[in-house]
Image 1 (tube, rainbow, N blue to C red):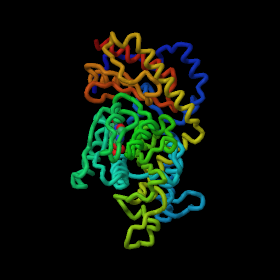
Image 2 (cartoon, helix red, strand yellow):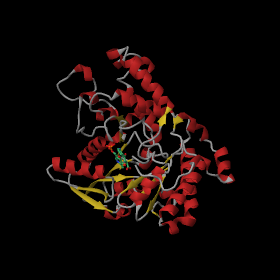
Image 3 (spheres, rainbow, N blue to C red):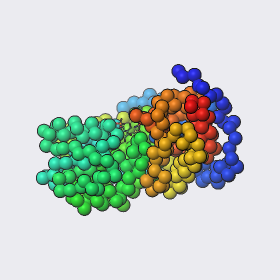
Image 4 (spheres, rainbow, N blue to C red):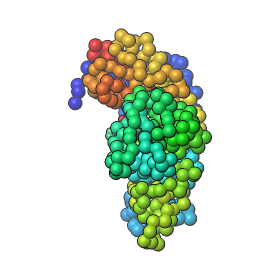
Length: 415
Ligand SMILES: Cc1ncc(COP(=O)(O)O)c(C=O)c1O
Ligand SMILES: Nc1ccccc1C(=O)C[C@H](N)C(=O)O
């Protein structure tokens, strides 16, 4: 444990009147009460693990003590008409997610990890792509699991494909008649740079390639419009901005026109009638075919309850607040950043920004340890990135002000 160089009561740091005023007029301010946030710290890591909402604890108590504890096996089918059966849980969660990502409910499958869903989506995309094409185009700085999954799949397919890695901003320039699929993460986990989903999808299609989008840092952070963008396949995490809890089930999106795509991990829960116990795989209608095995009921229940927090949330308001939070943080640190050794790597252009702010710092690892010890919980990413995630559902402008003051104080003591 690092002994903090700087010790102060974060919640007693003064906040400028105009930011208090912004909190007073924040249409999402009431959402914060739905979360259980630890005292004495400012948690800026919802882009790694979202906070716990009260509805989740209530739901987990019910699903364990009543549904599992009392009704036991009957819970798989009990209450189907009221939408309470475990069998239907993946589809109900898919429907809630669909609104957040601009999809139809039958285009979303929920379960497994993002990594596993990336495998399924990429396999389906390659099987659907033009047979003569042999390149998977990706961002050289993509999140490791996306690269590793592509490498594993390529090995399985007898090295018939090549993983071509280029800088994300150069993807359009590398689109040609060799490219079968483009595998991209919309918001870069290090820098927070956000790609134009519609423009990149259109460019890929114009070149005859399919798109597989990783929405790990997009879903729940701002509105995503997959169908409006013409996206083919997508995946995303349940435990970041969706607040589904550690290891929450992930999701897979397949546009309706791809519902006949082959299912690489065809399991009985993606069968049209699992309890027919048929000898051959007959896919369920829609994206449900991509569900492989038994629904993870406890973690699906947590995600289901966490998604209810979004029910009355205007996604444009979410985006507006997210950008205002990140703009404010950047503006507060701008006057001192050079002196403190901070180099902003997140785009200032709002259209190119996700919901985080990242800086390079030569001693980023040690600095983040100091910040965390002082109660400002962001994270460090190799090689030299300080990352601060902002979550419009539970952050206030007062949090942003105090976090910026805290960063300044810690760095001044560090220098
Ligand atoms: C872009 C991106 N993709 C995927 C993942 C994670 O995948 P998984 O949940 O399978 O570990 C993360 C974070 O862990 C991520 O940032
Ligand atoms: N799943 C995790 C398990 C343990 C620690 C971090 C993660 C993350 O999600 C990291 C995140 N994907 C990131 O953008 O760095």
